[in-house]
Length: 312
Length: 252
Image (cartoon, rainbow over all chains, first blue to last red; front, side):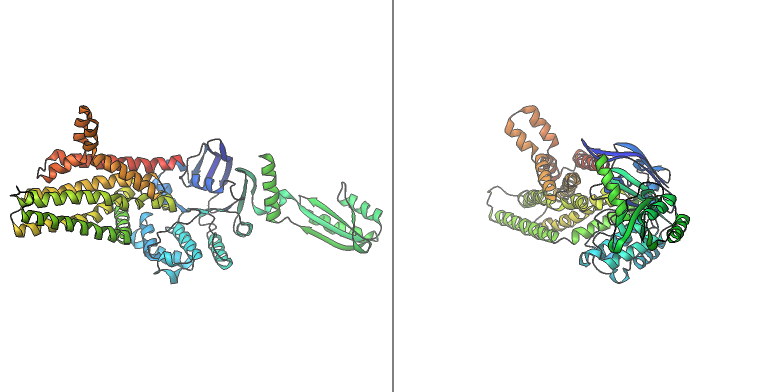
């Protein structure tokens, strides 16, 4: 649905986004993760057709994003970073106005307004002036506008900014409910927002892609940590480790004469774990702990942006 | 049909925004206070025969009043057009509109016609002056009608200039200042050119100056040339605005 190829944006000598390439399948939710200034908003603005790439190209549903094609704009819902609204209008009149602007028929407008206000829990606010609403409610109104007309592609730039935890959860549920129905690109620097909603993640750092894939793929690529703690003969412990986990091991001493080793692995070692446990016990060692920890998204993110900064 | 629907939505939105602004009513009040004052002073002067040669109430009261109206209007226009695009640019609303199927021309036409409609209310109310005068004496109606046409046309042209500068910047103050400079240049080009004493410049300014064409319409000379002048002037700035909106998309 969305194809981005070697997309680059420079402002004079300053590089904002460099050589981005990724694809988002129909109905997928792509999380665009990166620290502030990584180039997320710039990329989304280019996809929305609001900024011209210095090099490369991007297509949405086969339309070049630079074409300004009205059909493409009809397919697309966009939420800018600071969700803009006409504050002198009521929520109802604003949504009716925007539905008309988006080409939603008169007949469908009422249904659409019902649908989006229900989704964003805004029913009670419909007759209120937007300027009198709280910041979080205004942000939800801006998201409701992006959802008007059932767009096939949704570009959400920091959708949960200014929301309280309960509202963040509501918005996360709304985005998750779109999976399979709408292709979503969701930019954020809040990790939990991505972890719970995105089917695919692109991590940006210094304008470049530092890592991409599904959460599972990223975790696999960055490796899990197997922690083994045992008590007994040091040499026997080392021999068992060499049999099942070949390589150099740094065995550290912990309290009460126990030994601990941490082994980073990338491939699945479910079978190895059970054999390793059995061998430790069979060698007369007391097995105190055998735990596999997948890296958190935060660890992956920090490692990825660390590498990105080193490369830059 | 799509264009008409888009235009009508933007038109109604802009008109509502204009009527929601306290500034609109403040300026409206000041405008009528000043114009009524000018009208009464002219009328008083005429009744006393201050100029010693007045035999025609149209020349002594109606025409000078409309000259004053024209000046007050051109002072007010940048204050009301400065927000028309600048505000939408600054708060991101223009970006949002430019990602929807609405065309730049529909947005522009909606905003421009809403501004013309709002100012037409001002101008329609000024019809009270020739009507009041006609109760006192005979009024030359071609002059009165020409005066109203001059106000509508010059206002539309000034609005297009104000809207153009509003489309160029996020700052409403900058938009207003630039509009004043260019509107005053067009309005009083002849006065500035006469100051230089350069004859070709004076000739050119005579054709370009709004004040010349307004003066002709105020004298009852509703010639097509004068009307075409205002239409061309307005269209040039509307076209430049459309180009600015298009270029903005690619320069960011």
